[in-house]
Structure formats: C-alpha cells, structure tokens
Length: 198
Image (cartoon, one colour):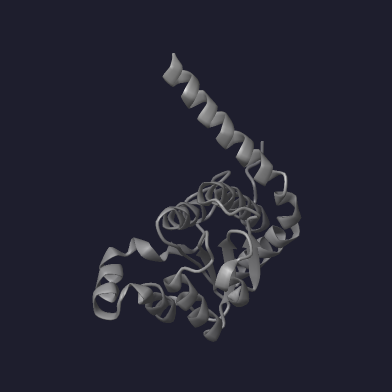
C-alpha cells in the first residue's frame, strides 16, 4: 500500500508540474500557427519537411514525420516528410567517416532544397548536430523551425520560427513538444487535405 501511495504521489507531482508548464503555453499559439503555415506552404509547393533530433527528440522527429506521411486525423494523400535519423546506413556511415556532429548536416546538404523546411528538435537548443544541420539548411534556402526548451539555446539565433517551451526540465519540454507537433500536423492536414464527408 505504501508503494502504491508513493507512485500515486509521484504521478500527481508530475501532473502538477505538467499543468504549470501548460498554463504558459498559450503564448506560443501565434508562433505555432506561423510554423504550420510555413510547413503547409512548403508541401503545397512540392517541398518536403525534414526532421532531426537526438534521443527522445529523435523519437519525436520520427513520430511527427510518420503523422505526415501516414495520417494524423483522417485518411488523405501522403505528405512528404523524413526523419533524418531513420536511415541507419547513412547515420552510421556519416558518423564513422565525419563524426556524430555531422550526421544531420550531410543529409540536409544532400536532400534539402530551397523552400523545404527543417524542423530541429532539442530540449536544450544546443545539440551540436542539430545546430550544424540548421546552419546548412539556412545556407541552402530552407526554412528552419526549432522546438526547444526555455530560451531556445543557440538554436534561437538560427530559427525562422522558434517554439521554445517555457520550461527547463526535459520531460516537461518533451511533453509540450509532442503537443506542438501534433498541433502542427493537424493544422497542415487541414490546410492541404479535404476532410472526409459525412
């Protein structure tokens, strides 16, 4: 019983912390809408969305790319999106030959075209491989959207749209990143695809 009570208390503590961050998220609404517009325009023009991140942020990148290529809210045409870490041969070859800092920049240089969008995800905003990818993306004429934690870190200076969650704890930031990501996917889907009738 004591263990059950402890688990319940930890959960409630996390929930209270989550709610405290959530209360401050409304300020990001115009920025999220702006990011969704840029993503939708990119796709409407025949471009693609590239995602990158590390660890939990890589999982979020893969999740969001899948929401676009598959479906989010309803059946519709597939939308062009790629999570850059999913090509393990490229990831390991580039990491081996050039170092881990370059695993995303080389892929952005190979795959990115003017008008495409790079979504860089980093809770600190300081992940070196994501920063280098964003620098390459800007040089190549891509739009850069950054999902970060409070302040944005070094990614803030490279982002066309900075979506900085007002929190410093990684779990809370990641929870808000997936909320933002789902919102982006839903808005892009609605902007580009006719919802089913009936």
